[in-house]
Image (tube, rainbow, N blue to C red):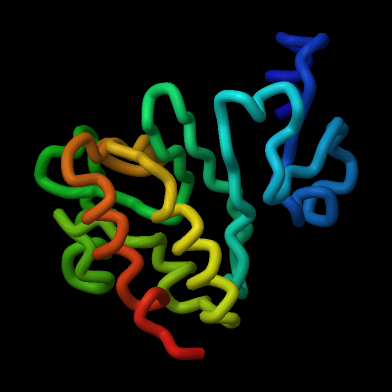
Amino acid sequence: MPSAQAAFPKAETYICPGIETKQPQMKFDWILGDKSPTAWEKDMEQVLVRGSRFMSEVAFFHKPSKTLLLVDLIENIGDKTEEVGLGIKLWWKAVFHMWNKPRPAPEYQIGWKDKKAAKHSLERMLAWDFERIILSHGDLIESDAKAAAREAWSAPLSSDA
């Protein structure tokens, strides 16, 4: 972050909740939440994903392009993913059974502490009119995106907690 801030000194820095305690020396302008800042509220919606023991994430929906933007809520690594190391391949195939199957990061899968809160956040995202998903880890999801998300999140969505 410091190098990006140095390269773009007039840009504002928005962070996910929790970063301010993990990185207290980091300078930032805003902590993200469920409400989009005025600067992008016309084009973007967002939700703070709740319920995880290990992670915080803010998911974004870009309305004009009907695109859901995620970090770890879905990872999509498989045969088509370029430059995957042997270690990741082994873990994703043999341990996590995520190879060629879009799923939440393992930290989410083992760390839903409040499934009711998680389910509420995920249902809010599924109510958005998205057609594609851009994610940080793996291949983009460019067809049947809503069905892929629903399947990826089936465990917390099916929870009665």
